[in-house]
Length: 557
Ligand code: ATP
Ligand code: MG
Image (cartoon, rainbow, N blue to C red; front, side, top):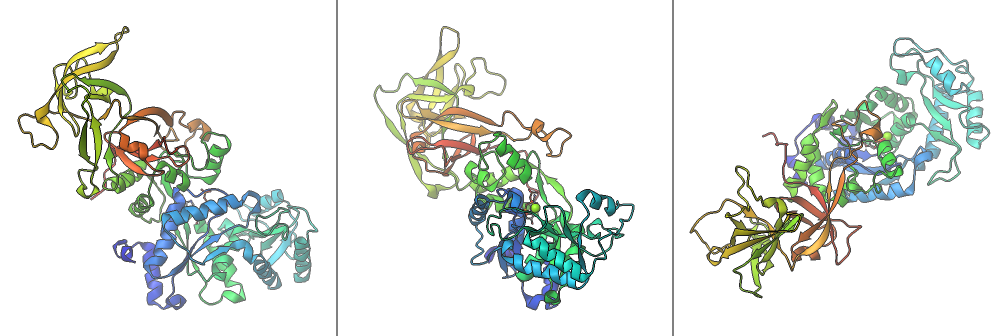
């Protein structure tokens, strides 16, 4: 991998390199990304995917995609499909290594039986509430359950009956027998198996008991031969349990996988929890998981983000051992940076004011040849018809100019980008006194690209031909959240920005009428835009603004 060379090294790489040097895991590196199929992937997941998969690539290792489908209540095949689509879009290929935790249910059951046989697990009849009471607190030890000393035989029989469906949800649970006085609450006889009479999206009604995450996850990793199990920091206190499970099973005495935690990605003014994102969808606050305002990968793709920009962003954020909040401006920088030389630069007028060039020969149409991106001459040029009647941006005109206003005002001369200098001579107003048209004259000597050096003007305006421009819909976005942080004292739904979308008409140059789904452009002065794949038609593209042109964030050198 050529891009492995440029990747900075981090504490995960250091651990792996130590293991490789010591000859651990037969010098293999094998990682996995284990999404729970209960929602669409968001940009936080992209960070996890990049870390999991790019780390494996860096060491010529392997990576698995594994659906952690051990919680049938909220899972759905719609989510499974979207997750695969999004990861492929990011540019990762897990090849044949696609797995489902549910494929290991039989094995997991047997491992639980092994723990029971070793006297390391038991069936408990305490209610959930009683279990909470017995659990103790951070400062006080817990108490042993009265069921803790059931015989191995009784535990085996009860567990088998749980599987057969003899008991109701919540009436019994299998717990590890560890230490009710452990300072780590996770180690106080954690639950391994629960009863849940649910239809599973893959195993149907075959099971009515399901393994708990803390028991299932180390098993999934170990069964697949994972070497380094990378996850987010909230699992740090679960690591002793991860190790306990594997240490007590005969199959995993050699080269048990190693859990390593890294900081979660959090971005200012960005919702980063599947539960909350689902709420936005269910409440109809957004149009769906792929609403262009959503930080989901499907939303960002639709908005116009590129996989490269997302991967570069994750790279810039880096891998840390403590949580921190990343400025959303950094993500915007990443997409600008990616599109800067990739996107052609065209003209669109969002709020038009008509300009008529009075000395333009009547009826004459000149085809102007204008470069698509001045910084990238290889991109070529497009033609714009010019017939002396154009639209400019309404706020590029001021009847009484303020200081340092160099655009159009009575008596001032400006350049129409790619065309000629024009000078404003007359203002036409309607009955209400609103300016509806400007009368200008042009100077034939000043054609763009002609090498004219006679005089200079300070303002250059973008414009579209009045008769040959195309009216299209443009959507401008703002953040979904009002406050900087997702965790504010306000109720989550009260923190939603009511003005996160603005839909307006825009007049674009003819070239843009042909734009294809997801094609990206810079609209000069307005930002980067991408063609909405859902709402556009062949005749009428709808443009999503990916990001404006101005950035408040500077990359540290
Ligand atoms: P959420 O909290 O948004 O519901 P989750 O952690 O429950 O997400 P999973 O499907 O369990 O979602 O996540 C799969 C993997 O993605 C996990 O290893 C998890 O640690 C990682 N992950 C989830 N959110 C983030 C994030 N914001 N930053 C980095 N990694 C994340
Ligand atoms: Mg989770």
